[in-house]
Image 1 (cartoon, rainbow over the protein chains, first blue to last red):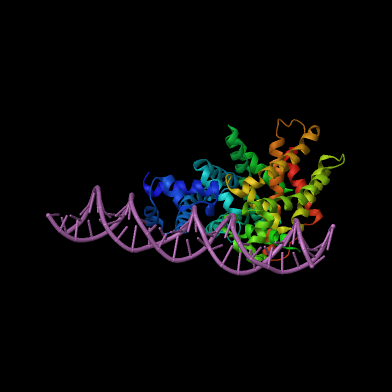
Image 2 (cartoon, protein in one colour):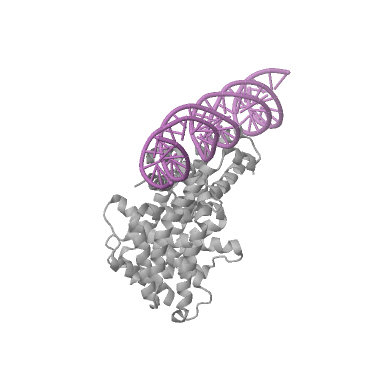
Length: 192
Length: 192
DNA sequence: ATTCTAGTATACCGTTTGGTATAGTCGCTG
DNA sequence: CAGCGACTATACCAAACGGTATACTAGAAT
């Protein structure tokens, strides 16, 4: 791992644990074992580092979800594949995923929220499109795609958040059977 | 409204919008129309202000939920009353409620999270006790009280969060019929 | 051998931060 | 009116902050 990657990894960890504004640049470079000019050489500013860190962590995750949506599957299968993509994203980089969740609920005028805003919106549109595409299967939607999309994302985040907390004590990975159950539970509330 | 109350109101608004560490004490006193010594007279430190603000906002909310749990009602009725208490808490002070949600997902070593930690835990135990009390109605729980409690709280927060975002555009209050629907939807996932 | 570029270290700067010492002001009580 | 406690304004401070000027090193290209 080169210095640039080291800086990003340490920054994500510190940003998640303590919050963006609570972390000093000095703290990051010490954790990464470099000096300030190195950080400013790569990222220009603290804000630039934040932007790059968010963007690079998001890309991998985003592509996985995109892939899960390809092909002409039915609604249940698509939701299950997407759910699996989310959970794989969490498994690949727990810290980055939990950081994203925390940023989504952060104050709307904070620097971190402004950085992830476009990604949150893209993610939302992505999921909403699933419900738009499979509108016939769901009967009269009455423009409820937004609510369904938010509900589905919220459910996934909540399950992952819960498992993360559980893991602090020990054990507890999310199995494939459980992914089926999550989607099933979600659809029960819709089909009625 | 006296100076002390003014400071708390302004602090909550700024803390939610920009984040605790991003807000300077100077900013708070300017918004409240007072000077720094006044703030330090009442709260001792920025951290003390944070603690008091969180605590006082939480108390009102907490008592409402506690009241909703009293009496020997069945599970469905209890959950509906609790859900109504949550939504009333949100209606009474939207900003404070949304702030709480954001703090729950904040980094575990941040100052704001450490302050609300005991309240989050109390809230969790409170809801879990409902499921423990009505265990017979739910068949074999296998120690799933924790998951149900987190699921229920997560569902409520998610609905409220969604409505808050919707409200930015206009309209959208949470009706009593909707509260019934939310609880109904939640139970569907459990009774199966 | 020399030049160029990417990257890194030392040492520093102006600004802002949380917090305070000092000096009052105001209303209440003796 | 004297004295007290609660409260507030002016002016200030040491420390920490984000960021930078300067100089150096190592490797590739000429």
